[in-house]
Length: 199
Image (cartoon, rainbow, N blue to C red; front, side):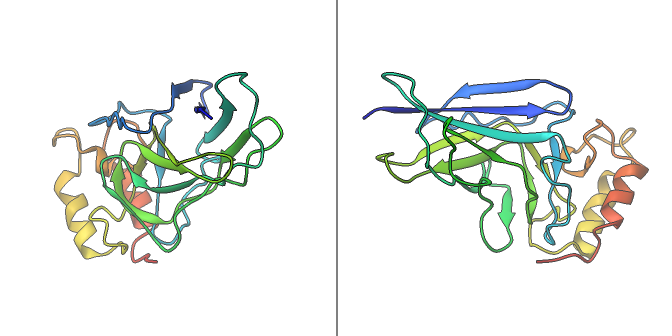
């Protein structure tokens, strides 16, 4: 049986992004423009939830022939980011549960990890799906654990210092924790709030 997966990312500002699923194409983006799709990830897992960041992911499963919703599928789980820049603490993040009667499930919690990536990958398995799908959601994950060693320490502070202030220094999206297109005192305050955090 052929299946399809449609995902929708609903942003706080009301913008909706959607795409057909693909089991082969990554479609990685080198970077995304600043905006509401930036989510802070911390090794301690104390960053904002996706719901608080206005970036709840809704996954919808239907079959191709009739477009009927597939309930009881999942939960979906994420092995990491599209560009390999995200490292998780402990268990990989999963969706909030299996699909409901409408074939939908959401991802709304917080993530525990470090690094930076411009897309997050979701793998979906379980019956009646015959194999896993891969889908990449355009969502910027940024962390005060800049070097992705699962500890926010002096190494990360030195990396942050190299890019602070921007402008006039060149813009480094890994350091823009609030996603406003600048690296400033707000970003430093966000970094300081997670300093010495680890898994």
